Length: 116
Image (cartoon, rainbow, N blue to C red; front, side, top):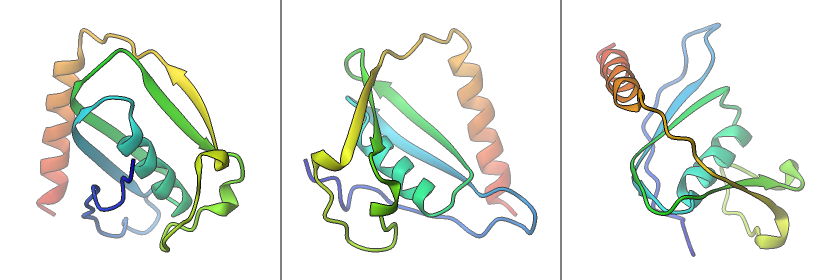
């Protein structure tokens, strides 16, 4: 599945001495491919903290992707990676009874930081 072009970005440099933070939002996820691709690209670009959030989840599994050789990913160029470049780990997400509260806190924090 070609995930190029499905992610948007909006950000600004972190203040001096502050860690780089990105929020990745997706409406729904099935296996997590869009989230994981965004995580891999942002990590390769030097992002220090990534918060991933979806509104809904289809299925009961999330696949975590890792690069066998992280130096093969160029975050600012078109890449020609194939499935052989990745390792995969299947993860079963845990139910969090406080998820709704966490969601509202994260959204409020994101709105506050966007007003700067």
